[in-house]
Image 1 (cartoon, helix red, strand yellow):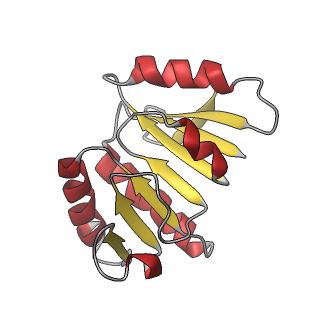
Image 2 (tube, one colour):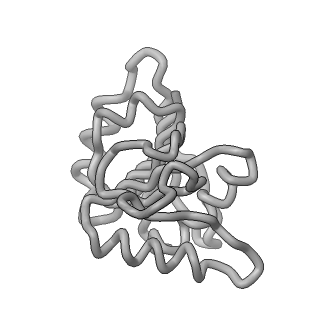
Image 3 (cartoon, one colour):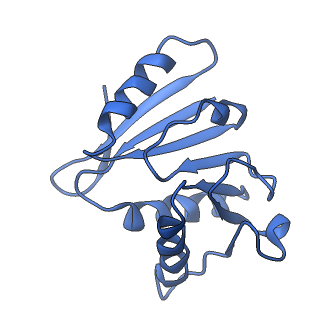
Length: 146
């Protein structure tokens, strides 16, 4: 399984996450977005609707009708009601239960970097887990780092 650590030091989550969600949908996948904070869930919900005038990211929120049919589901709990095999941890909090998914996107910033480092160390060298670290360069392109 793959765990992608995204260090958000140049672009905010609201700009990065929709593009990743778009790529998952293009490949026919589903995504569960987990954020323990209801206010963050509201912001992400709004951003997915307004992400780009040229694209539509179909999504819903856990607790609303039709949640099982949503290609992208925003939730405060790690429960893939939409049968997602991809999960995005949007709040910078690592959850060990994500290791049951095929792919994890873990977003962190300066405020949550200590937890991200602890998660990285805990995953390093574990059989069947490929942690990868991503950071934006000066031109805004995502580069895989050490």
